[in-house]
Length: 156
Figure 1: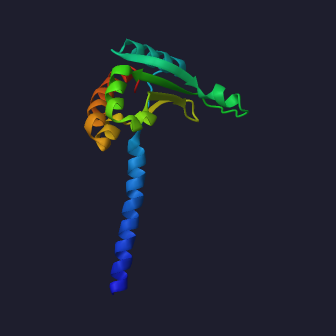
Figure 2 (figure 1 turned 90 degrees about the vertical axis):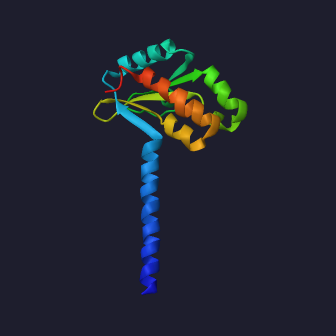
Figure 3 (figure 1 turned 60 degrees about the vertical axis):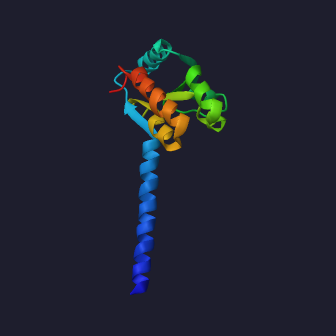
């Protein structure tokens, strides 16, 4: 009888751990369909970044081109837009330089097997709240709010 209880408790913990892992991984990256074509999505996001107060589009990384240089051909387009707001980065890095691996912010534009265009990004609101303090205030608040404005008119 006690063995059954122990097995039940362990099975419950295992099931909860698997469920938490699946849920957390889906929450860390936000993916939404674009209402535009691939090139239009990249162009609109690029323009929105440059128009957003304090934000700079640092680079557009064509991942297909990069992989092809190393002999890897990938049939679906993938580009990553790296963007930074120096003021926000300065606030975070003043006390939390270890978070620099999360910077700069990025938006990924990619095609699925059917040619549909998607935009994925780190869930900065959730990540900011997980860290607390300055990171929560900047990434969880200011950055998350600006990202909503930057992706406006693109996400379906």
